[in-house]
Image 1 (cartoon, one colour):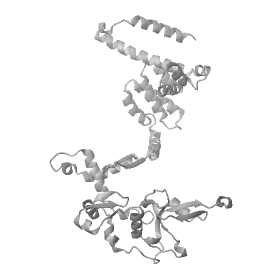
Image 2 (cartoon, one colour):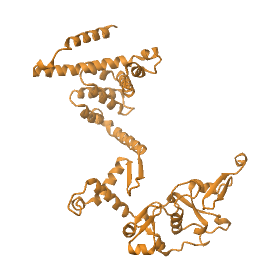
Image 3 (cartoon, one colour):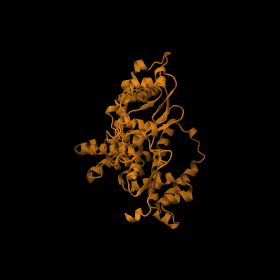
Image 4 (cartoon, one colour):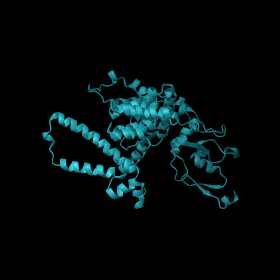
Length: 409
């Protein structure tokens, strides 16, 4: 099998002859024909290269390389990602003989071949062999009529053309698969930047993004809200940011899920004089400062509770009249403790439980003087007899495993 070496020698000699040839002397039609021929030749050479790569495991073994991609990186200074992508492409072509044969004839470009291979891989795994073979031929035929980008769109609807009877079920499966992948990739981060702003960055399923966009558009009122006070037009991104704030302010906290009795109400603390005068600084329950003017506005529109109002005058110290801490007491605990009171723990107040310093069942009081916030982990430790609980002078809790407790378990 010396045809490959002979062909390469002929190509090298021909290229040597053309090294000094100046294409400027070609006529327009000649340049057009040369460009088309070069594109076909490039595709054919790339197919030959990939065909050899797919069979070059012995080259890697000879020098102890992991595979031929690693050999290319070590011996020919190829970038590792590109080398491994080349190996994967070569192996994929070996499994698709029709695609490889068409590429070997220069019927389409290597990019077309990538699109075809990806389109075939995206088809359901349980397709009948004859349907899969028809899909491969169809995409190869269409590659000569479409750009790779357009061919990619055609490939995404290929089953509707070659097997409409099973396309609907396959599409449903594909959509479900995409939705599951979207759920797995979902992420949201909220970062305070320290300059009065917060960065919100997230990746959410498409249906969630569409729903949020629809809700925000209800608040943007583009023909009205787009104008600044001086008549300038606001950027669309700013309109959406303001709409997001309005959406939150108009959300009824009583309709949101509660955690530990009450976790959805924002509490602001200040003096009565500050609230009435609109002067000074107020504080959110996590310690963030805001102006009292903003506090008064939010109290009217966002369902927040200023601590000075006393939560509709509900008593905060209920003694032993109730076993569980009331929502009002939890708000007061959150204002005081800010986070879990275990030593070194910073779990925020909304995710903590209200804990009786002395268990209610043994005579403990359900009031602020005898209550603290503990996260779920440390709340369990507080009631675990294998742990010794110590109340520090500053009110924090320290937990230590009792000696020998592990052995007794």
